[in-house]
Figure (cartoon, chains in turn cyan, blue):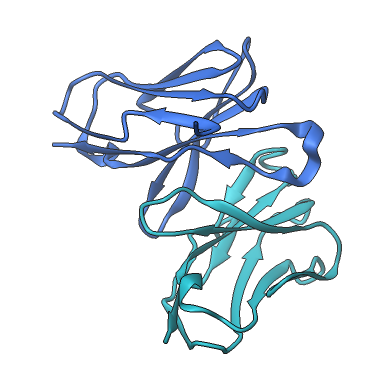
Length: 113
Length: 114
């Protein structure tokens, strides 16, 4: 079992719709959770992080965390073509990797005009 | 100027050659990392360093070595390059005092071993 799993996609949504990206992790000791956006050929950039169970909103983005289910998601409201990218889930603070990040393989999102 | 600078941006090298990828940062961060990215596999940690005298192996260190020349500089070497080391390589930095600030990534080095 991989440490962090994501559906590779591509996930296609029409412009203006809600895009839902999911991530599961195996290490129950994980403490913090991050979402990065990566455009093709570019470096990842941090979108959001979340520590506590529940929802955290920042503009059009909402991160959701359920530690009991070992599940974290990212919702993008009013999706725009510029949101088309690969979204990486990263987990930190687990027993296996401590303070280092463990990344999922990423989900490719395509927002159709 | 970029906060984290990687050189070269692109490199094609032959099997068996030694190659060095360089990373320098102006963030003042103590922690530096080298990752490689392959399609479908995400980012995998090669080596990391929490300060100048600290070097640690990551998930996939075989075939690689690193040098932390100064707080701001962290180099990755491939002693004898092989084709399956063809990948996109990222350097990253972090500051544990900034809590959830995450990593700052460099622009990446695309390495092709032929």
